[in-house]
Length: 478
Image 1 (cartoon, rainbow, N blue to C red):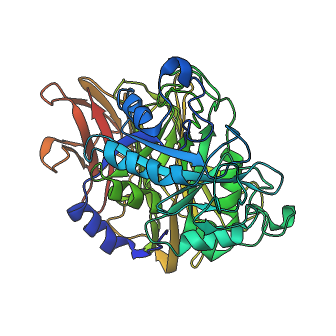
Image 2: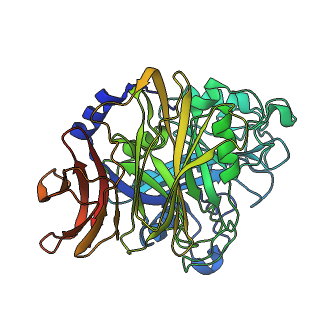
Image 3: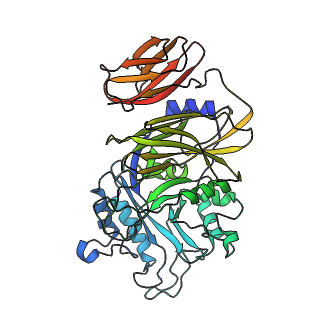
């Protein structure tokens, strides 16, 4: 069940800085085994059950968790072929394979069918099978524990909302999917906003698949995407994040392509992963290990905030492989805003950092913002949003980040070129992640060279400070 928290921006910033330390974990929650219609190569791979699939996934590169989401119904053998007794067996196998702190193994379902106005929903956190089938060959009684008709999305989302520890994640969604009245007017993307559905649904993928890829070389990417659908649901008023799916039907878990659902959480535990999903602390990435920070005054992606100051956003792209962000875009929109559902309000080019202060908000409107990154090699990353409501009157606090400065290159080796478009006295200060000052230089020149020879590689904060205000951005020293 998704929970909504709204915090005063200044109070929560203090709590966040003092109490939270976040790490990045990469994986996939959409895959299948031979318990339904996956592991189609089981005769050659020798792997057909969830236990063997988890073992395979643990050896994949940049892969910290696997969720197996079997189709929840039978229809016919291997299409998709799932029967009720297998659900508890799958849950047990996931529990046996799970290694807290090392690799997470999860088991859930993909609910639904592909016919028009229906659709598929990944569900985790239910210990009983949701379904609708009776009279399945070889299965006495019903083929479910809890009844929910395949077309009853109102009932489905309400069941998930009322089940603590569970969540819904939309799978390869279409605009006419998840209808509550059997036509497009009742589809999630067109019907009026529903708070109960919003409480259940945590996200959807940027890309999905290729579902029937047999590749194990990490490079069989889907060329499709669900970016426009994501913007449409935000426009409808939904609070949801964006991730990444593989939808494996062959034995190549984590290896069909390098795309990843990236989770931001303090440590690698099931409880933390579920909490991160429910709080939308995740993003979708073509790159298998890119670490993205998208924050509003220290509050990370997925946060729902309010405050009386103009919001200040920061984006940091950190790729351990040294790839550069070709562009960083910050998008903005609000519910029922019209137009294109969201607009680009800031672009940074060939830089791993970006900052933006939004001076154009109106009190009482909840705005959503998210970051889109394209790497130099064309790989694509989109973050979950941050929502912000300004409370009247909105003002610029004296110490709010208002100095517009730039620097290059980033990442940097030994010399950083700093550009400050003003000639008054200022201090350029570099601090490490613990807040320790490693460089301090005074200047009154618009262009200043900072020598970094004595600073070890890592992520730092560069602050430009005057007697009245200051501004900070992240830098990477290699």
